[in-house]
Image 1 (cartoon, rainbow, N blue to C red):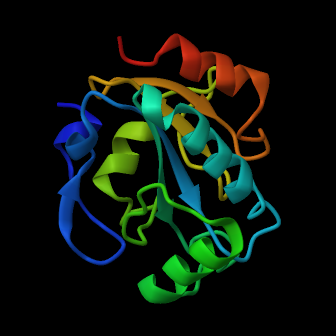
Image 2 (image 1 turned 30 degrees about the horizontal axis):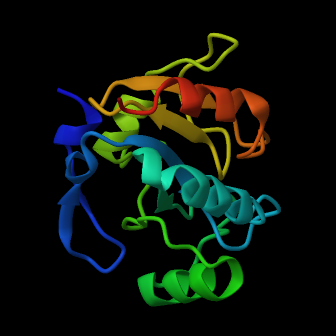
Image 3 (image 1 turned 60 degrees about the vertical axis):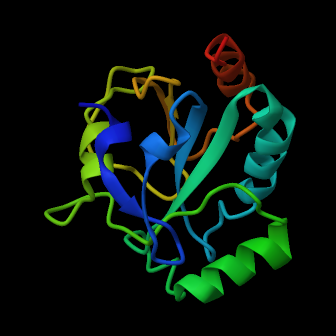
Length: 162
């Protein structure tokens, strides 16, 4: 099983899965609208724009577990992202990424260690996971690493399909 096989819902509530994006390299990010790191949306959108024609997508999962920084409804989240950051990448339902109600996608993602060898709970909003076109989790980047950090860009470029 890979993260592609796990059912999710879109931000608008429709059934989906990351498997709908199979064949695409993904950067999966837990996002929030009222966080000090929220401006990372701009860099995430630039990455999405830069690489989407080469088989890459950013995907966002809103989460309200860190300082209640994503209190919005799906409509409010969508409007915030669109108006403030021009977000065009896929956004999924608001979920929990830690604890007993952790979404199954994040149960898989959090099993993967970061560059220091640490796996486990998400530290804060905007933790990033690179997922290969086949659904394999390739890398984990902690929240403070900017989306356009050279380490993230080189990992994306090394894992684009084809």
